[in-house]
Length: 448
Ligand SMILES: NC(=O)c1ccc[n+]([C@@H]2O[C@H](COP(=O)([O-])OP(=O)(O)OC[C@H]3O[C@@H](n4cnc5c(N)ncnc54)[C@H](O)[C@@H]3O)[C@@H](O)[C@H]2O)c1
Image (tube, rainbow, N blue to C red; front, side, top):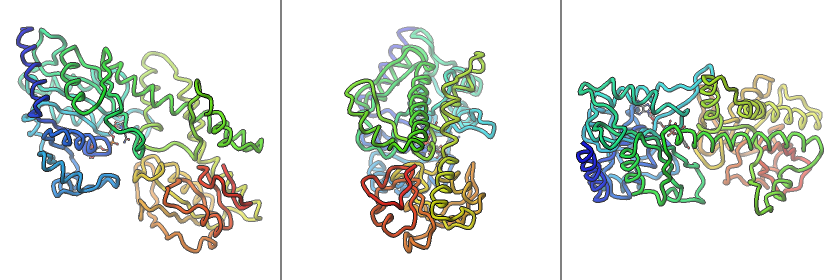
């Protein structure tokens, strides 16, 4: 049997090497679509699966719905065989399936694995021997073994089992976390080392072959759980350090010290310090969510992840701090927040991206409205904001004109297109949560 498995693995890697391996990416979102394009650039024929029929049609028409991905990139991929579908029966024709579906929290702040479960249920009937299934969605250690594999094994009528060693035939499974930093063009995607944990050595070998063709370095770890935990460590590290600077920012504000100046000075140390910056609160699909995947799992081991909880507490309180600072700024001008006209600049959770998920600006707008402010917003990426998982705003963006009509302009996201000198000049009061007005001297600025 070992020979059969070895032969199967050699055939698979050869198909990867000569680019005849067919790759399926499930979830054509911020992670899955760029990954598909990277594989297409390497001349793989990629099939993108999504349940969102609008995304499927847009892609098949050669269009894009992610601002930083132009339609021309989709059209170039189509020349290498890229196409999208919502028909899971096509899984049967695929050699390697990579799952990139969402992993949010539910209303009780617990992991919502329904997207992974639904995907596994949809794949299972079409599984075939020798196929490789890789999970990329961020999740708690144990998901691949405890959630994904049981559904795949139970849902296929041929009674295929996962192959755990070189002497067992079946399908192969690995976990490999996505480590992309949207909007960060300083590191090319190929240069981000790819961590991979396989269920057994053959799965690791096959997954390494696939990723080795598009990433300059692969980093094997011993199990999928180790790979799942690696991703969480990275994000928890960020979350805890951001909470630390957010806390110190509040202290510095009281002590009349500029935290940004302090961080710039501290980061000149050539070792032992990495700069993190304070802000109006955490946003995005990862940092505000992923740590809670681990705290939830830790409870099963009778373990409290105190750092995560404390960091969560500090970061969740930041939008409230921003609103308090806005009230203080208005107070200095003998105005109340109630009835004040406030223009929020930037809705996206970070600079120059079209992603609203968990953005602190949404909470800030809701808090300002609850306290009686008359709120408008401007964001070049979002002409309108409606209803989402945690907000219900129904607002249209306003142009960046007549800034002196507002009692306060509140910078929440520091998009690079904004002319901050002009904004300060034309506004009555500017509350800056991102140090976007660095270098501009004006009594009108409250930096918080
Ligand atoms: N966005 C990031 O920067 C980033 C970075 C690292 C890791 N991650 C992780 O990657 C995963 C995906 O995140 P994303 O940002 O791409 O999410 P996304 O919401 O942008 O995309 C997910 C896509 O999956 C589709 N989908 C949902 N259920 C499906 C199903 N059953 N079958 C087929 N398609 C389905 C959705 O329609 C959507 O298009 C998450 O676990 C996230 O935590 C994201």
